[in-house]
Amino acid sequence: MATASEIKALVETAASAEKFRIGVSNRLSALERGVDEVEAPAESIYRTLYERAEEMEDLIDKEMRALVKGHPAYDSWLCHVKGIGPTLAAQMLAFLLPPKPQFGVGTWFKAAGLAPEWRKEQETFRLPRARRGEGKVQHHRYLRRCLYNVATSLVRVGGFYREYYEQAKARLLRAHEGEDGWPLIRIDRVARWVTVKLLLSHLWAKWAEAEGITVRPPYVVTVLGHDGYIPPPEWSGNGKI
Image 1: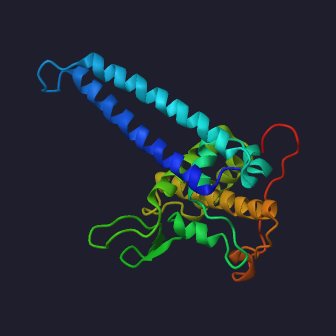
Image 2: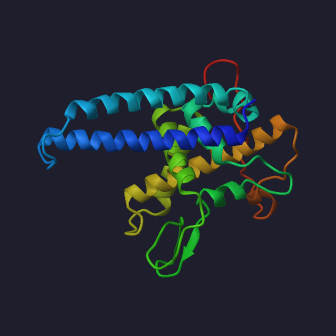
């Protein structure tokens, strides 16, 4: 089984390859539109570089798929979730630390910047983000970007988590109808993050179960006293969750 450091190294390499491909693509676009001021640009070289970059990304994706298979969290549960393929799963597992008995899934929420902070000037809770004059953010920005892609995939493909997203969105619409501070785009994004946090809580539980680790119940149950906990959906043996 691949180690977390191996998966992380490959994911970081994939990010570098993607950045290079996008840079070359932007240069090609500039050449095609005639806005690149370089004299006698060797356009064929950029096209070759772009093709090589795509080949590199394909090779990395193939290796990531091979590495993630055999990971306890992926094989036991995550591979059955609709919308979470090997590459997306590898990106998640590369930056999520294994569950530990003394911690809860809230450690993942904080690491990903999904723990809302009270914004005094707005008198509301908002997710942390880089703001001028407030120093560096403490969460892992790449992980949060990855999880946004996870949310987009879950919403796009349907299934258990798409249904939960729709329910969350409907609740938010009812709760904030007519409020200027809650436009439709904010309601959509909050519903997506709520859905991702549910997925993470399920992944925490299933990963711990696969590793034979007993972890404490969710914070919302043990501390806040909520009684509406939603357990992880189980794979029936047919199709995806």
